[in-house]
Length: 379
Ligand code: PHE
Image 1 (cartoon, protein in one colour):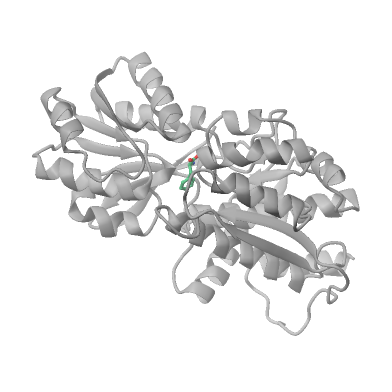
Image 2 (image 1 turned 60 degrees about the horizontal axis):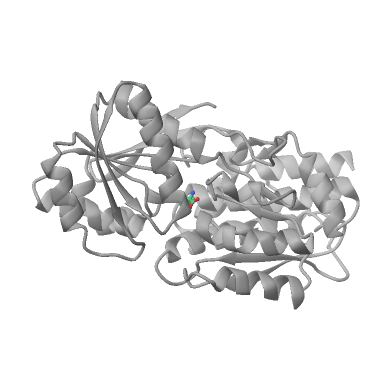
């Protein structure tokens, strides 16, 4: 056992020189983990990144002996980024596939749709990246491996005020997304608490493509920063339109900005933008380095934070099963709740009494057409 766990650690460090030496080959009934995400549709970049992270975790688990000696298997459902589809997906995963745990979603609104079903069935749900506080408040079956928006919003507002010297912020909020509404509230509260002013508050609906009317109002209000708590497609489009309208205000965003497509859509309009996220692939942490190397070898590009968080979410479920000595959903739930110091690629992960993790936020700036890590802010 000692040998095995040391061996696994070495592999995790990316220094594995003996690929032929593995954990025992898992055997028997697969342990099914349900995975639901936006693999296609508007937010497909999120689903793709998360799926890559989840698959790598399952492969690594199986190479190291599986879950309690059984093979780990991912049962994948695509909600096509559509409202209503996450509930359908989770019903299938629980009822038809009898999964022992669920990993999903990324968007808070979609996790909020699915979480009450997981709670009612007593099946633990681990969200890799939904940051709205209401998500884990659904009940004792719902866990998150990332920070929550009360922290993220405060980090952003403080950075805008202190480091960027912004004083007059405008908000452009997706009123259909819990994430956007909640994050805007925390940002406003912190920013005004520091002495700043919210000079305009404009709304749009997820999927909108034209933000010119809202941006014209923001221009008239004389904002020196525009906070866009949305996802990469709308953020990229709004950035372009803001510049076309002559707005020079600093663009600010949250973790929803993080997708390779952000820069493809927004282009030069995003130069100088600042956003917060969960993780930087530039991290020097040895576990993270091993993950970045394995991921990059497989996909030809470095992982975004969402891929890393999903990798951790899947492995955390396996770790809970090991500690519980069982994959029965009730036992898994108890062992998950007792997680205190799991060595994840996104950092040490443990759950507090609200089943939330406390993680640092990374500040990223767009400079010279690249997303550059600026600093890490601890809770
Ligand atoms: N935090 C966002 C939400 O709660 C989702 C997200 C996470 C998007 C990470 C991108 C990256 O809706």
